[in-house]
Amino acid sequence: MDSCCVTLKTKAHLAKASRGGLSNGDNEFWGERMRGSLNNSGWVSQLAKGLKTEKRPRKIKPGVAFSVITSNNGKETVTIQAPRFERRRADPKNVASIILGGGAGTQLFPLTIRQATPAVPVGGCYRLIDIPMSNCINSSINKIFILTQFNSASLNRHIARTYFGNGVNFGDGFVEVLAATQTPGEAGMKWFEGTADAVRKFIWVFEDAKNKNIENILILSGDHLYRMDYMDFVQNHIDRKADITVSCVPVGESRASDYGLLKMDNRGRIIQFAEKPKGADLKAMKVDTTRLGLSPQDAMKSPYIASMGVYVFRTDVLLNLLRWRYPTSNDFGSEIIPLAVMEHNVEAFLFRDYWEDIGTIKTFYEANMALTEQFPKFEFYDPKTPIFTSPRFLPPTKIEKCQIVDAIISHGCFLRECSVNHSIVGERSRLDYGVELKVSYYCSHFPSKRQNNA
Image (cartoon, rainbow, N blue to C red; front, top):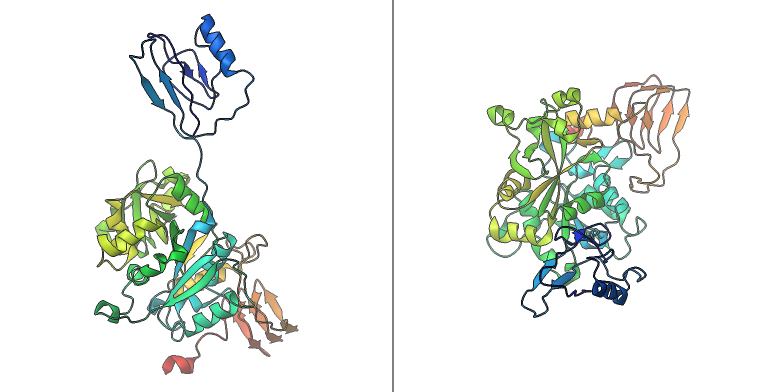
């Protein structure tokens, strides 16, 4: 740490702050070097010459500097600490992500009759788990944990085929599946009882020596459709010295009660959080979203601020909340976050791009149909931030005498003398003579009627 000392007369004044150093004026201190003159006395000129203020190259690094002012008899001493200006950059090597494999997925039934929610097909040849996984890879985050419990066989198979072996190379990172398991003790005999409880049961993983450098932990859902650079999210979290940061979006009246809603102050700090409020509690969470940059018209359509269920925690804060502060709280959205708002610095991060929660059959259908539009809000085709999936090595789709309008046709399909309009055809599908597909999602991975009745 560099410092400098200046000896002045008893009644001397500190120079006025300027961006480059000191100048005449009020008793302030700012900058990395001294320049100008304190007064016109000759000894000060000698001092300046001795310090070589005009020609000396800037060697003092940004940080803490001190100016000590004393009288000739050494009776007065004033110490002033300069503010720090260096910005701490977020390092993906110090970030780990936890992707929640979802619960029973009852609202997506029958799509989840034999597979976990993150394994449900989307966009023809992708799985929902590919979205957060690809976002992590594109954000250079290569320490990824996936918590699974219900119907996890197909999900585990897809993860192994896509992200292990012949899949994506994670360098010194890893993708680790943490499956629900029973452990000794009464508490260890229970399965995951919520999102927070699932993470709590694997706290020991983050206390392992190999993970000791993890400073921030991302909590991600496995059933959302969006594209995000998570390091922008983490950088915002670090810049604001937050304990917890919640990613959020404006939403309308019709769907507000499906999400956790929040209120924040003028600085972006969350002051109130309510999970899926109804009735009067819902009305109480209405805010003026023009403060978020929305136009008055859009603010009227989206008067609520919803949590995306995407969080970043400081590691020590997360472990303390789960193990010591709230050891019986089992869910992040309904318990941990609302309680933490009252005791910790919980900040909001406004996400300004497309995001959709694929939690119900209705939202699953609408999100997929939106992909077939001529100018969709979300596209899988982005060479800079691609969405990865399993390399299936299927032959190209063969099409004979078909009429296809605004459709997505996956690999390994055979279409002959059929009509496909505003629809998605999943991989390994066959549409033969006279078939008309309109505003539909057809996929061989979906359960058949016979399976639904079983």
